[in-house]
Image (cartoon, rainbow, N blue to C red; front, side, top):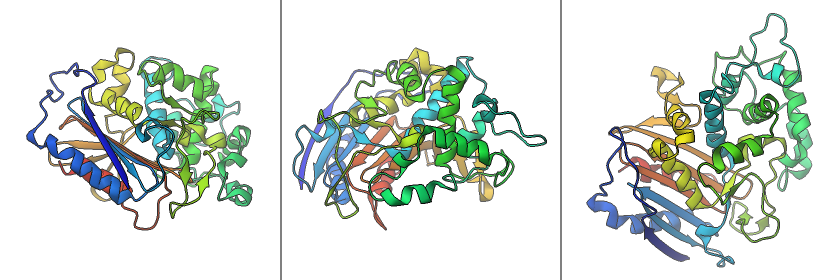
Length: 364
């Protein structure tokens, strides 16, 4: 196991009256040790835990594998379903800027009419997982099975995602807006609907409206072509390399790859929305609860994040995984803390990676 860490100030936060002031507490000196313990517990070939507290960053790297060709914290990692936090922010921005309302029927945007007597599936339903769609299209599994361990999503391209949605809209599992059911399918359709509504593909919308304004220069929806920037994924046992993840037609639900530093920049913008004026309204919007479910409405969701209570205030987070990598993103406005954790090993039963990252953020 090799471990390295660094602490730096990327620049003073701009601050607001309703945001925490830059006042790192006396516990900051323990963060390298705590993050190093988390890196060790991940037991993965490559692991990075990157924390920002009141603008001060502490980044700890390590791994059981050989050192890659560049520092681990400078590689781009596949973040899987945490991509949905980017897509949710993108939709919020398009709504806040007046381009869309969120109430547009997705089928109409994708070129089909509204089925008679049916409640239409809207963009808001898709982003909040209340569209009545399954996790994946019904015919996904037979198509993906031949490449289940290497490239299952790549066998389900854009046109097939859209066609599966337009065929399924007559037979939803339940009426849109009435029940929550996590759906990669739904967010994938959202990406295509946003593209149809604006005449711009999801990845180009992402670049123009999020990556450029936030200066996320080392974030992309597609793997680099042999330039050594992308981390290499591994299987559940941490051995054997896997090809770069191909999201197929599900890019809006899981295609983003980014360096830990870019992920921290993304999270720091949520802690201080005023630092990026083009996105300020959207960054505030995605902190607002839009859905409560479960017994006592314990489960709270925003357009982009899961939202859990802590003793001092809400904790926002999203995790994700591809065939050979994992990621956890989270932030807490009350403590001015953000955490981005990534590793190059697919989760196992009882895996401590996500629970360790969540606990670091929750137990401050």
